[in-house]
Amino acid sequence: MARNILIFDTTLRDGEQAPGNTMTPEEKLRLARQLDALGVDIMEAGFPAASEGDYRSVREIAAEVRRPVIAALARCHERDIELAGEAIRDAARGRLHVFISTSDLHLEHKLKLTREDALALARKSIRQARRYTDDIEFSAEDASRTDLDYLCQVIEMAIAEGATTINLPDTVGYAMPDEYGAMFRTVMGRVANADKVTWSAHCHDDLGLAVANSLAAVAAGAGQVECTVNGIGERAGNAALEEIVMAGRIRPQLAQFTTGINATEIFRTSQLLAYLTGSFPQPNKAIVGRNAFAHEAGIHQHGVLQHGLTYEIIKPESVGIPRSTLVLGKHSGRHALERRYKELGYELTEEKLAQLYKDFTTLADRKREILDEDLLALLHESFHDAPEEYHLRKLEVTCGSVPAHAGVTMTGPWGGQRTAQGAGDGPIAAAFAAISEIIDRPVEVISLQLRSVTPGRDSVGQVFLQVRIGGKSLSGQGASTDIVEASARALIHALNKERHAERLEATAYDATQHWGV
Ligand code: KIV
Ligand code: ZN
Image (cartoon, rainbow, N blue to C red; front, side, top):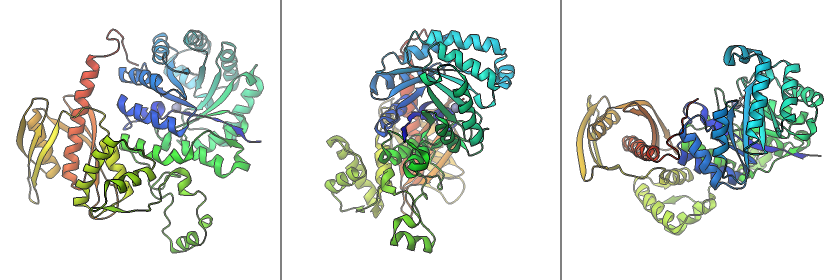
């Protein structure tokens, strides 16, 4: 009989922790709402001791997102547990997730603790955590490389102290499926009261086995799987949520589990995350990659046309990938736009529709056919996670010979317009030089990624930018059929986010708190 397993999503914590995936608290809240629509059971909203931003976003998510359990991570440190406990205070159902390394390698070289000291510290920390909530998850970090007798000793203590979920992570993605499943069987068979807790798998993908290991743990009796959307996470990433969920759906007889995930929200969630972080899944990524349902070879195309199941084990619609029924263009009206967004799963308010229709007509003047991807780019572009104080008013570039020149006119917090000229190796560098002149601060580009939203010469280019301005790393994105304009917009978006962050810092919840890992 198939069991229902809990999906513990850690996109906002383990996923966000990886380089390049940083999100602002506003972006995290947007993603949290979508994870709620996706139907995750538990959402790990962050690591409050890591930064003030993390603390704030866990608090905001806990206060707003009411259906799933909201988890906050803490090391076995008093201050971590206090901050995590406070951050989930307003949650409808809050979980405190306490972890400590248990492998000798980590104890000796990272924590410089003996096994006995780590055991005592974990015991003290679980007791402290219980003052905030009864829903306690305990993780034995690097469990898969931990001596089994010691692991059982620590876990038995954690259960006795009141932990309700026990997580045995494969922290460095080292385990093989049989081995990982066997570890669960052994520990669950040996510790007292194993049947009183939920067992959880948490796998990293260093050997490309995170999903296989998670499935092995489920087969061995785990009732919860920790995973991330698009498999983002430390190093090679975490187990991908969409792959675990669809493995259960497509092979129910073998997988023997169900989940509460609303699969038709998978693609939307994947895309939102990619737009927020600027990191799109590789084209051949299972379930959500651009090519996951594309059939190039003639023999495959022929087969799929005769019968979908010949080469397609998953119907794209079942994971929410829209089948385009309508191509929009210059002459399409507001109703057609509204209908298409509805078909894509987005109900728009009158105000949002009016704003998007305006952007749509501007785009339609530049691009003959507006495809779904364009509409999604317009939609994501239209959510301003920071008030727009800086605006691009005019951009003119001349290029083709070095140096390129740009003239930029902007409005900003100073009031009125400012215009400056800039020169550079290419038109984007010239535009950035002009903006830097206007804001009177040097702009150092860390990375600039350009993505074409759709195929074709008139495609919309989407720019994801990371810059350093005044010692601060900032990110921004912009879209346009003109990539120089898209880049300038991305820089202006980063400036708006910086202003917004400065305001928030000035009005922090509690200026006396000290953060820092
Ligand atoms: O990979 C890991 O071990 C973790 C723990 C904090 C659960 O992310
Ligand atoms: Zn992890």
